[in-house]
Amino acid sequence: MAGEVRYISTRGGKSVSCFEAVVSGIADDGGLYVPDAFPQLPPLEDLAGLDYRGLALTVMGSFLPDYGTDGMKQCVEAAYDEKFDHPKIAPLFKKDSFFFLELFHGPTLAFKDMALSVLPHLLKKASQALGNEKKIVILTATSGDTGKAALEGFADVEGTEIIVFYPKNGVSRIQERQMVTQEGENTHVVGIEGNFDDAQNGVKAIFADQGLKSALYDDGYVFSSANSINIGRLIPQVVYYVYSYLQLLKNKEVNAGQNINFCVPTGNFGNILSAYYAKKIGLPVGRLICASNINNVLYDFFETGVYDRNRELYATSSPSMDILVSSNLERLLYDISGQDPDIVKNLQEGLNSTGKFKIGTDMMGRLEDFYGSYATEEDTARAIGDAFKKMGYLIDTHTGVGFDVYRKYIEETGDRAKSVVVSTASPFKFPDAVIEAIGGDSQAGDQMDLLHRLSEISGNPVPLRIENLSRLAVRHNTVCRAGDMKNQVTEILKPGGARR
Ligand SMILES: *Cc1c(COP(=O)(O)O)cnc(C)c1O
Image (cartoon, rainbow, N blue to C red; front, side, top):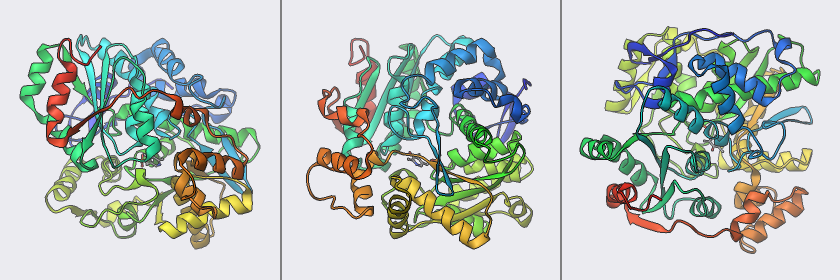
């Protein structure tokens, strides 16, 4: 299925190679890179015998042709190995009539590992191929999951340094512990006296600081980003959608060619966009069910065609979906506008200046693949409780949002097509909310007690990665004011500085 796919910005201009798209992350005009044509999957029967790595090689290789078979094989093999605690990497489970695709078997117990375990290798190879001799510095602000997954992915990857800023009092206890115990000589973790927005704004200011940029360039460094605007994070996610279909085929749950639906707990719109891309390359997909929590900007968009970020941001029990601007929606807008960069530019300008935009009826008409709904906090807790009581299956809060919305979808549409609910985090990552949802008391005992209680109730062991957290030494204890982030970066990267 090789073809010469190249990448173009959603806001127009010339195409670039996949290497350039991966290294730059975002286009110079502020647009996002998208493939200029979609490769097509070989017949599904021909893929049926492949394991996860074999499939990843085929699918990622077709989107990112410049790596070549050997280069892509090295990336895939370095990524999808024993770091994952399940041999299938992305196993599919049937519970009653429901299917759950578990994407949390990687090192940080959330789905971001699926892409962030391979992105560092893609980035390193692309950078080398482009003749870049500078060290790549990954700067990330995190509200919890992305930072840890990026740290794990980049730890000890040659030619890279990674610096993660997190709000000192704005992440869960487990998330903080995961980050401050991070190993790897090239990893740096700094707490901020402020909230996630402060950390994010600080990182944006550093990226925009031309003086700092050129000083560091002279010292041998270039900045890059590991968030989901990078096409190198989206393409690896297409793989598990195809893989889940192959598992359904193997188990004779579907016949080749039969449409299935995916229900995806959504924040930045990256995961569900990958499902859409899977459909574009020929996977038989019916509806894409977009599940939001009460930060339901996307639900409103699918209902009315109006995207409006002018509203309060609520902190929910599914924090990785607490988001008002879903960056990857721009890639969908590009597609449903008939690949028209002028339309995209107009809509994004509206979003920047007034915080909202409205699409036309023709574009609305091309959204039929999507269905949007949302779960309140009560809905989410009920879905977790029901999954546990009725099926003996423990799900986390993000997956709880997905399961609730999937049940709403069936009720509303009567569509009984086989559907896969995407399970994005381990329930052990959010023990307080999960314990309460299944009728327990989260106030009794410390975090470890909670985890062991969750283990007893569910009959599932506490994942070793979490169990061991209390025994790992704290390696990062720097805390700074948000206004001091730039100095921290300079300090870490200066010759003889914290960089080892
Ligand atoms: C990041 C995240 C999401 C949202 O994924 P997007 O690609 O941003 O839509 C959902 N669940 C979990 C656990 C996450 O970490």
